[in-house]
Structures are given as structure tokens and as C-alpha cells.
Amino acid sequence: MATDNVWRKFLSTIGWTDFVEDRRWRRNPSPSSADRRARLLGEVDEDGSAMGYAFSVHIFRPVSPEPAKEMADLLKGGNAVIVDFRMLPDSKAKEVLDFISGVTYGLGGSITKIDRRVYMFSPRGILVRDVRRDAEKKE
Image 1 (tube, rainbow, N blue to C red):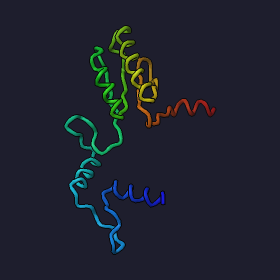
Image 2 (cartoon, one colour):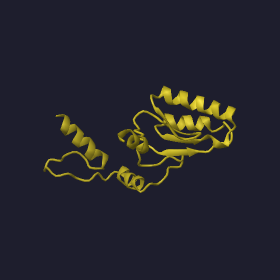
Image 3 (cartoon, helix red, strand yellow):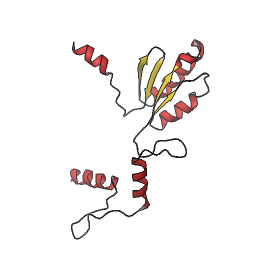
């Protein structure tokens, strides 16, 4: 059944093994269990990615267009990126904005304007809600 598969996947995710013969669950002693615990504490991997989280949000305040490739790589890795363009000249900010917008569009993601010259780029699967705008629409 579908619910059985979902249940097994959930138990596998939290580190429990398959159902054993005596109808009790047994803890998976694999090293991945310790890794999961460490990740849940919010440790950061050597490459700077957040361990144990589905995604992370990275904030950039670029003074040149150079970090654009790093931003694109983070988006491709399933992470959200907030970029504050206030330190870049208009022409350079437009270059980076166009590039990251293209990457975001290619990934099926979304772009959210947070403030003047501050944007959040997120890949598909990350819901971004503007609570203020939602409240204004209700009024």
C-alpha cells in the first residue's frame, strides 16, 4: 500500500530499520544515525552547506559581479539566495540580476522582491510568502 511505503520511508529517514520478525522496530546502528543527529544540531559541512536541512538561505551583498556563479551553484543545489544589490553600480547589478534570474527561471524557481534592490531567488519546491502582501489583500 502507498501509506505503508510512506511510513517505511519516514522511519528510514529518522534512522529506524525495516520491521523485524518479532514485530518491533529496531534502531539502525549505522553511522548515518550519528550523522543525522549532528545534522539536526545545525552543523555546517566543510563546503559550507547546512547539514541536515532540506535547504539553506544564503545572503549576498556583492560589491562586484564575481559571486554570481556561486549564487547560481547554490540555486542549482536547491538552496535559496538573497541578494542585496545596493553596493553594486546599476549596470553591474542589472548584469547579475539578469544572470541569476535566468538561472532561477531555468530551474523553475521564483523571484521575490524583498526591498528596493534586494531580491530572493529560490528554486522550485521552496514556498515564499509575503505575509504583509497577503494581509493587504485581505483588507
